[in-house]
Image (tube, rainbow, N blue to C red; front, side):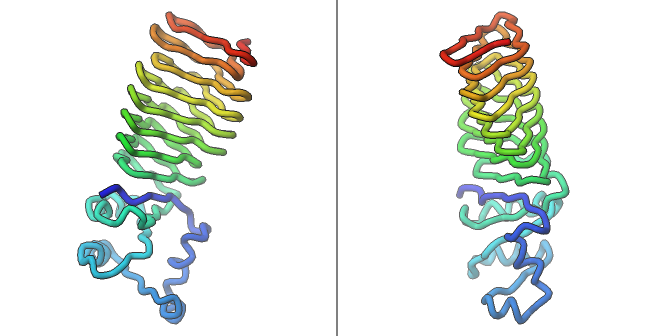
Length: 231
């Protein structure tokens, strides 16, 4: 089964409202819900399979402990990971969403996996068929993009010190920024996007429709397309 979607949220997120109100049994009854607490109880509830689970809220330690059980949930069951901590060394084969104030490090994004970054990620690896999308205020640092992997930056999304290996692709869309890339694969800088301080190695290609500053060609190629500029 596909991995359920992971959402990193903080206590003020509206999606956490049901959990903030868990101390009010009357409210739960009105909503037709009951709350199961504790790792053992939650694991048994999921494994039982008789009840439809509305959502699951975990901290990072519980996510690590219950990962194999969580993977058996239907893929449309929201799994909320309390932010303010760090998700570390997870392998993503489904969809993971890291909202603002959340941090992830050492993610491995495999084929069919997609990570949406609105917080911060560090030292991710994107494998063939994997995709990392960096949105407004999101920062992805030290990402390695292997052959067939894709990192896409959108308005106000930032990638720092990415390594794009042969066959890997980084696309910086309008309003996005990439800083200090090491390019052996391909980087595409779209209109009104910016690349700062990249090093294009042998076999690396920078397709430029936006702006580039301090790009060093160490055996790589820079293609300046219509509307592009390199300072």
